[in-house]
Structures are given as C-alpha cells and as structure tokens.
Image (tube, rainbow, N blue to C red):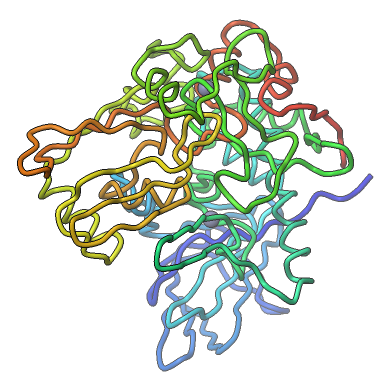
Length: 445
Ligand SMILES: [Zn+2]
Ligand SMILES: [Zn+2]
C-alpha cells in the first residue's frame, strides 16, 4: 500500500499576517511556543515574531507540527474572493505552516495530510444534513481530483513548453482557468480549487465518517486516476471536459443526461441553437431540477442559500449597464452592444464561444468561465443562456434579458443532482458511475 500524500494548500497572501499557535511547533530544531504571532514583510525580509521568539528569513519559514493534530488560527482570511459573498474570518487549521515571499507579499501555505484536508473540505462544501451516500461520493471525487492534480503538476514540471491557457487574435480571446495558475502550492483554499476553511467547521461526524469509510478510494478510468470535477448544478445535461478547460478529451468527463436511466447520453443535440433555446426556456426533467429546500441545503452552505433559482435563472441589463460592464471586464470599448451571439455550444447547451457585437468593436470570447466573468460583476451563473433584446431603437437594444440554465461549469458530478440521487436511495458508487462514464472505484492506499 502507498502512503497518503501531504498537500500544500495556499491559504492567503498578505504583507502582514497575525496568527495563534494553539500548541507548540518546531522551526528546524528550535521549539516555538504556543501564543500569538505576527509575520511581516519588511524590505524583502519576513520577520516572524511572538512574545519570546523572533526569526527573520528571505526565503522560507516552516513551522512543523509536533503531532499531526497540532493546530493554529489564521486571522482575517478572505473567503469567497470575487464572489458576491466575499468576507473575512479567522480560520483554524491542523498540520504545518509554510511562509515564503511571492511577489511583494507573504504566501501562507498549510501542509496537511490529504485525508485530514478532505474531512475539512467535505464539511465546508456540504451540510451536515447531507445523505451518507452523497458525502461518500464527494469524498471520492475530491480525493481523486486532488491526486490527479498532484500527478498533473509533476507532469507539467517535466515539460519544457510550460502550459498555455490563453489564445488571443484580433478576432478571438479564448481563455480557460485551471489550477495551472498555482505554481508554488497544490491547491488554493477558495472555490477556484475546493473550498477549504480550515477545521473550524468540522462539526459533522457524518462528513468525517464518509471520508474514513472511503479512505484511499479513488475513481479510475483505465490506468488513470480521474480528474474528477464537480459543479453546483448542470442544468439537466453535463458538459465535456475539453469545452471548459484544456483541449483534451477525457472519456469519463462527457455529457450525461442528469436523469434515469443512469449514465446515458442526452437525446437532444443542444449544440444546435434552436434546440438549445427551447431547452433553456423549458423546465426539463432532471435530478437537479428541484426546489426542495431540504435537499438544496445539503449542498449550499448557508451563505449560498439566498440563491435558489439556479436550475433556470434570468438576469436583465440595460444597454448602459451591459456596455460599461463589458468595457470594465474586458478592457475593450465595444461601443453600444448590438448582439451577444453564441458561436459554439457544448452538449450541455453551455456557450463555449460567444461573439460580442458592438457598434465600435466585435470579438469572440471563450471559454465558459471567461464568458461568465465578462458578463457579470462577479460571475454569471453559467454560460448556458439565451438572450432576448428589447426596447430596440435604431437597431440598438435598450434592454437585454438573459435566461440561463445551471450553475457552474457543469462537468462531472452535479452536486444538486447527486444530492437528489442520494435522497432517492442511490448508493455512492451508482452516483459516481452515473456522472463519470466508464470509471471504476479503486483503493490506492
Ligand atoms: Zn485554486
Ligand atoms: Zn444536474
């Protein structure tokens, strides 16, 4: 059996950080006692000090736990960065801490055993009222995804060419966001990777039990550990991997109709505009087509519950709002916006490439997350939408009605759909095999 990996989680970056060691730690061979500490960046040096401890470094300071359960509290960690619920809170962590200088700030890393990290992630992402099968499914995909990311990082480090996630021409701006953004740690603590708010929220023995029950269990497709993705709500059909991220086909991340019979391809071709429009404007049968608050509360932590209209949603912009928003987000002055035209849709109906037509400039933008960023102050729920134009004067719309489906990229497991499946009595392996085509479960440590 292999040993479980230790993860490097990027928690925060600042020039001044306050923290509390709840137990003694070790720095090299020196003991550092429990108590309050600050670490500051001054003239290119990190100065870490407490009541009876001072150390200065230009490179890296590592605080090692004496026992695996040793813990510390970081003050004022920002959570929900760029989301409507962005806020600051104190967070408690177990394991070690690393500090190093990264672009004029101190980067804080938590070094933690993968299974300990998972318990926290499952507790943060899910509610304690979730069904056991849903929690076990989540534990397996989070574990698979993490190990796949660590493996991929090693593979990229071996490549000389680096990694490209953006192409720009005069006509097109295509960008995707994956965790290649992180060079100095494995995962970040925010929704970009997996929401990780330390151990403050480990209150659920069901969540920790689900991790223990599935210890070392991952999803595999042939010999590969699955890069198992998930999002809040697929909208009825899940999306192919390559339409959201790098152009690689993954046989286990392909479109699935989120309903019974399990694991079947969609019977509607939503890449076709008329069919996509009809689909988005309807309320089709799907596991994730639910308004059951008891089920929704399982996957939406309290600060997300304000928003329950994600299976089908509507937003409106005036001409002025949309043109200034696009100018702010893209840095391009399109003039008055005339049309938002889908150029390419994926099998879930998500727009992969969108042509923005203004009276001064036109450009195609992609992929889904870039579209969502450009069309909202934070993030549009999804890129699966259709646009209606109203109050048209001299060919210029005064109002844009955007109607959409789903929340998130829609690849892999649909959290709302999986919660409904759990309530219906499906087991975690049935849930996983439904969303990840041809994948199997295997214990690797
Ligand atoms: Zn990240
Ligand atoms: Zn779904």
